[in-house]
Image (cartoon, rainbow over the protein chains, first blue to last red):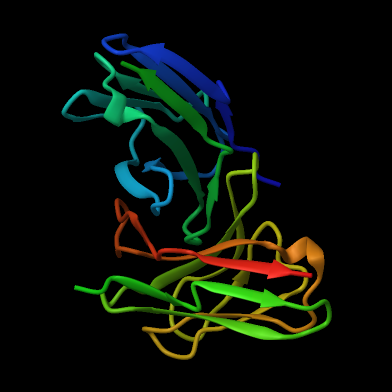
Amino acid sequence: ILNVEQSPQSLHVQEGDSTNFTCSFPSSNFYALHWYRWETAKSPEALFVMTLNGDEKKKGRISATLNTKEGYSYLYIKGSQPEDSATYLCAFGSGNTGKLIFGQGTTLQVKP
Amino acid sequence: NAGVTQTPKFQVLKTGQSMTLQCAQDMNHNSMYWYRQDPGMGLRLIYYSASEGTTDKGEVPNGYNVSRLNKREFSLRLESAAPSQTSVYFCASKRDGLTGELFFGEGSRLTVL
């Protein structure tokens, strides 16, 4: 059983705060680590796909890092805005099977 | 540009009835997935297909069957629906390649009474 854990489960911040979440995954047989943003009443949309240890990706105010040796990835949001309110999901790909297992998500609420 | 299309969007079934959720993608992707979403549990993988003609079990396959009819279509069948299968079901396809991301359908809300 592949265990993908995200923390915290939920987060409430004020507009302008910076925040970060963690995704933990098995350190063996790593293939890829995905991050998705999921707004209420919509479908998840991809933020980043990372494959190499030490990878860092950035899209606007959102960035992510990857440590495959210890099995974790961080997602950072700088200067949170109310429109950043969503659930953030990570997904772990193992081996070369195409199998992608999601964590339970971190729900972020940004108050104006 | 349709992307991933799922039907139906809503369905109510009685316990023991059968139904098939249809999924089609127009992006020529090899890999397709079925997930279910339940409160507090994120997305759980039911079945996936790495290519036309192949399917593999995910985390929660019991009570479901799948068919990868061709490269475009990947259907999910409930042979004898149970209340525990009440959920929102998402189909996804993955862009080919190591860094390919998932593209999701709009979801199908299924209620089993």
